[in-house]
Image (cartoon, rainbow, N blue to C red; front, side, top):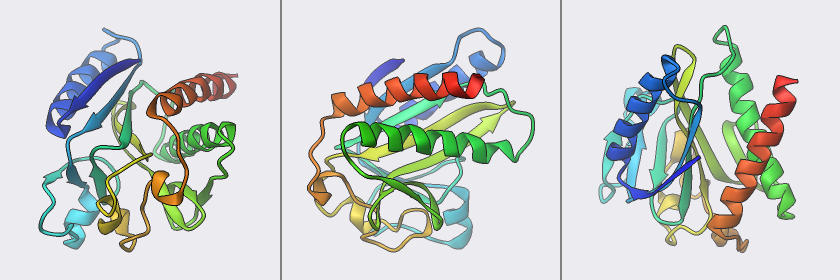
Length: 203
């Protein structure tokens, strides 16, 4: 685990590419990067192909992960697992997504927060609102990009972005839903459940 603090998305992406190349050759072990980004909306291939863009006052960047639009900024903790997965075909991407969703759902449950999956879109939801987005890319089954949890974002910023094809106001933060949690507790919970679920998966 490596906490790289507040960093631009471009800088984090370059770091991920470097770590991914090293992980592919087993020069390093699996590495979980944790950070927050300066505000930007990343645009995945699906949103780019569909011509979907955020409002004009948002900085944007095109990326090669799965999914559509994703807001990044203050009050959002980002987890980038640069992991070599023991998988052998494309159908197992869904298994990886499900595992990440389960890690987040269990972390929320440990904090007495009821969360769920939703058939409309991968990620984690509380009621009718999405608070966790997931988008990965793979090279030789080594992952780059990852998942985000909106815990205390500036009012109205993430809500105005039609994330991953959803309508505006669908994606929000825990604080906007009246749920107060600290970043430190979220990070500790994610690491705990990542270790627990990974062991279960390997068994």
